Image (cartoon, rainbow, N blue to C red; front, side, top):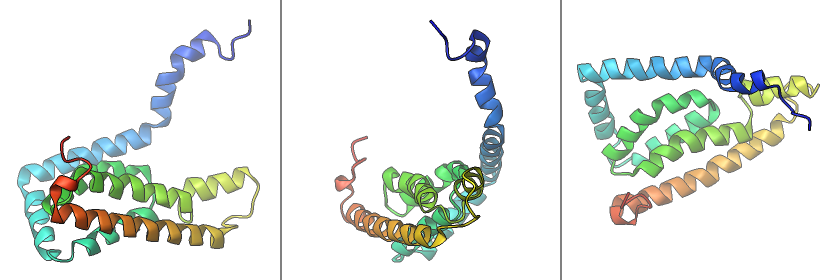
Length: 173
């Protein structure tokens, strides 16, 4: 029977995968470490309290701004901001599902729309031998539709949770 990979390649798969993801891993560790240092000074707590005060009564505006920003800048590096977004969401009276959606959902929307992501546009279109940014009109429309649908769901769910936290899908977890 033929083996698709050699035994040495099998054992090198994990180290090679870690090496190829080194930039992302390093970035997450650096941002996480920096946030921990800043957290130790108390600056994050003060900043979050000020942000929460500033957006009191306008919480949906902040959610939409984060969703739109992370969607336009779609990148897996936003995972490093998950703890910060989580703290903001809890401070505003939301649940962890909203925080997860703001980070993971918005970057997924950005990938699906694919207007500004270097990998989904630049690398992929080069490999496929397509003109750079061809189809950007279609991707822009898709991005806008995904953003609008997500904003509607996000604000509807956020308002429901703020009024009655027991309706959270994460309430008992």
